[in-house]
Image 1: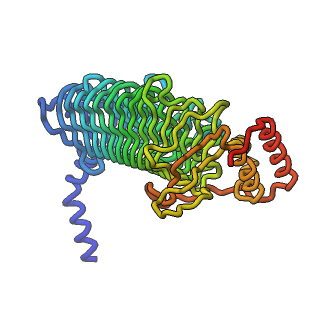
Image 2 (image 1 turned 180 degrees about the vertical axis):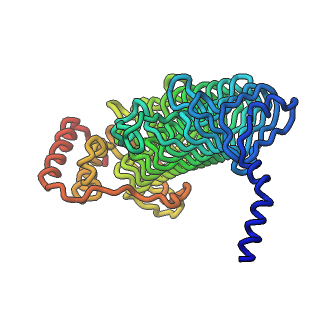
Image 3 (image 1 turned 60 degrees about the horizontal axis):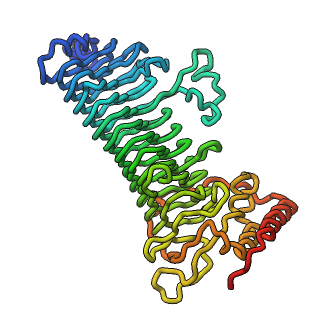
Length: 473
């Protein structure tokens, strides 16, 4: 009894301080009253109402400090340069697409702003940067619960709502959106279940580094950005990993991209009309398509360089348009169901070695008599069998079976006349990064009837005969 009374007395003694810490405050009033350059501390507790910062201050939250916008527009708007915001949980942003409401919105006046150690929940967009330059966003987490508007076919949802299905449909916006910004950095953020993890549109000299993005549509979506660097990010379980379209140059290094398995997208990385794209030391594993090079560099000049990457355990290692101006060197193609598939008709323009350094191919059948790490015979593949297999998921069951290997062996008799891959210096030692914990996707059981194998073989052989190509000794 004495112990209980002592505990009660302690609670009563501390109650005024505890009540004051948990009591909501008018954060907007605190901001408005702060002089230029002041540090404003937001106490622990849930503080209701939207906040606009219109002059340079530092806004820091104590542990447990939360701003709740009650689903009215953007929760925190930064409309002044050189502002610092950190240590806050931000929730209750608008959930309608109109006006693109955000947990944190940086206007064009917010040059030099730093947003760090902020958690955004229950908002259409996590953080939006509109035309502000020299912005840093680091250690920010964004989690959404909605569906992707206009992308229901790819999300696997029915579009009937979220939660108990009785309320209105909640929509997902982007985790972080950089619009027409220069010299901005997004670093060490965690973005989960959003539309596009980081969406970059226009602007130049952005750096996206060390972020973790999962369970979203496109992990990184780049449109028309110039001089963008995407480095050391972990992108897992998204519909697609890195989607780069137009603009450039772009440098993509040291990323791990796995489990992009969407039937309609499913790219580890896609490079479309990006001038001067360089992909180096990345791991692209267990995706539907590891890398798609779609006319890269043709319309905007500079070629694409794919150097020292591990492309492994994908259904298709590389999907390549015939006109793609790309060089592949020092990569490891390991146990992809189909290593390279040509997406279209015509002869592939890609180059499969630089100097005397080619690529490692797990299905290479040659030898290295000199022991110098380079095969003595070229690695040459037509890719037509793989093209047929890749176009029909049911035929993926053939990939590990003897019939598929037999068809490839027969096809290789004709491959040198018009090869998709002609690597003159195939490597016999894996040169590129390890796959870490990447696991292969479940494969279909090998129960396809023998008649299907026979039909496939007849189709391929007829196509080969029509070419009537001479056989090279």
